[in-house]
Amino acid sequence: MDYQGVIIAESLEEEDVLKDVKILSTKVEAVTPRHATPYLKQWTLHTVEIPEIQAQAVAEKISRALDSAHNDWYADFKNDTTHFIIFRNKVFKIDRKNQAGYDEAREYGLSLGIPEYQVDLRVRK
Figure 1 (cartoon, rainbow, N blue to C red):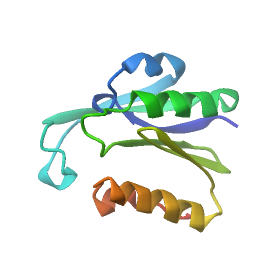
Figure 2: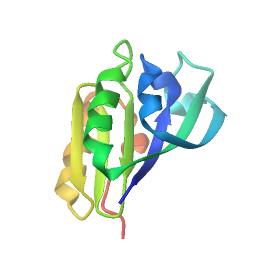
Figure 3: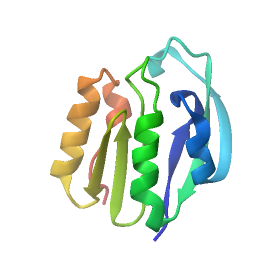
């Protein structure tokens, strides 16, 4: 089963990874103070689809491509059973029924300074 998620173009040092995904839609959005990203005025959100067979490789490539100057970025994509949560040099592959996995990814994101509301990671019913 293919995966879907969002990649923020401005979070990437290298956009080559976008060649490995199917971009379903793109939206440009103003960055507000709540986003806690004062070094940007806007960002470009790509809703993407990744074939299941390529998911792990794409997750690792995104992890290496995320902005190293601002370590407070992450990307994610999921299907019905698995959720990839991707930080710079760290990939969480979580069973979507496993709250402990989400808790670990959430704590890691908070340790990087990502605002709490942006890492609202939990099992969804």
